[in-house]
Image 1: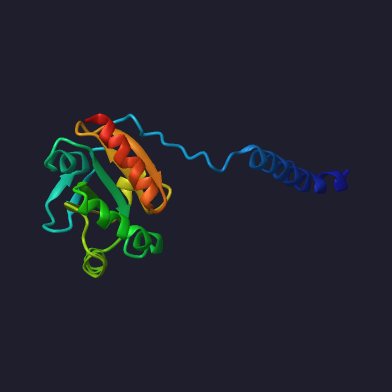
Image 2 (image 1 turned 90 degrees about the vertical axis):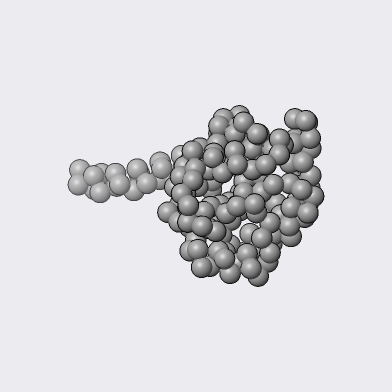
Length: 178
């Protein structure tokens, strides 16, 4: 009888392993939840990198001039893929696409140095030092980008470094609104 009780934890562990294996085999890794697409941009309040002024992400979006969509880009100075995507963001800026940067879990000093070294594609940069805006947006890491309509509705989300192809997809969605 004692022997049977000593095997119970091992049997429970084996059952859990089978359950996780079954889940992993039937899960499509290409599916990324975009729960906020079609919903309003969260109104999380953050500080502007430039001035320290406290402003909501939604109000920062409203202050961007022009009637077209805006790209909100979550990035960090410590993020290698963020540096990799930076030329694409600079190209979007050169095309007149307004970008709002959100420095995720980073210091202001490191963020400023990053933007000085690579160039600043953003009309404004907000600091998400505690990562709460990232949680509100449902990000899984940085970089992540969101295409946001003039009314603040999230139109699309891209996880990972922005490439010229994904930037073009964002621009196509933006053009469809005009």
